Amino acid sequence: MSASRAAGRGRFITLEGGEGAGKSTQAHLLAEHIRSLGHECVVTREPGGSSVAEALREAILSGVAAPLGPSAETVLFAAARIDHVAQTILPALARGAFVVCDRFTDSTRVYQGALGKVDPALIRTLEDIAAGQCRPDLTLILDLPAKTGLARAAARRAQQAADRFEAEGLAFHEGLRTAFLDIAASEPGRCKVVDAAKGPDEVARAILSAVEARLGPLAAKADAS
Ligand code: TYD
Image: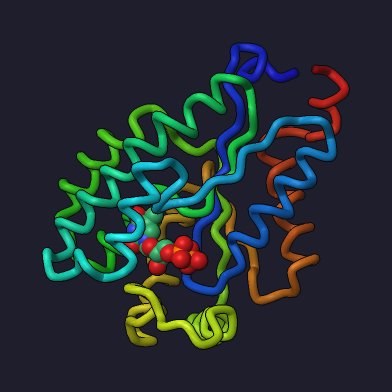
């Protein structure tokens, strides 16, 4: 068992990227693998992941809060994150579990910050309030061309209407891709870019090797615990 897990802290892994990148499929595949090696692994998502946050998710993604403007939406994402971190993520990490989270603070930096043009000082302040010391050990940025991602997202939702952010145009989604890649370039110690245009099995293998390169061999941890 590694020093930080012995001290009662698990590992916090976030998956980020644009629409249709396959984050939720990959979060579940990664969690299955981690569990198969004998570790506890909590899969969660944002916005959501706790009861208050799931209620706020409805308000945000339905578009009902959009007329309030991007700064107010940012506050709502932060409010949801406060509950999610306190109720779900921190307790799991305190037990020594792995937490795999589909979107976290980088989504706010990208959707509300880079694309929504919300004041960077507000983004930083809310990030500090909502996440505090709860920062990812590893962030996997699932990267693919915006067109491919939007086509996948449309196929996935079939007849349902696009949500608040899927409904934005191609230029917006290309901007998302660039902004996520900028974060990866500025924080190479935390972030790893994964080519998400490949098939799910190949993406899963790339994710696993990134996790082990950053956090150490998963099987060895199981043997030692
Ligand atoms: P979701 O249906 O979970 O989309 P995806 O499958 O693409 O993850 O919807 C989440 C949406 O919320 C997505 O469009 C990104 C957006 N979002 C933000 O704009 N800011 C945030 O801080 C978070 C967490 C998500």
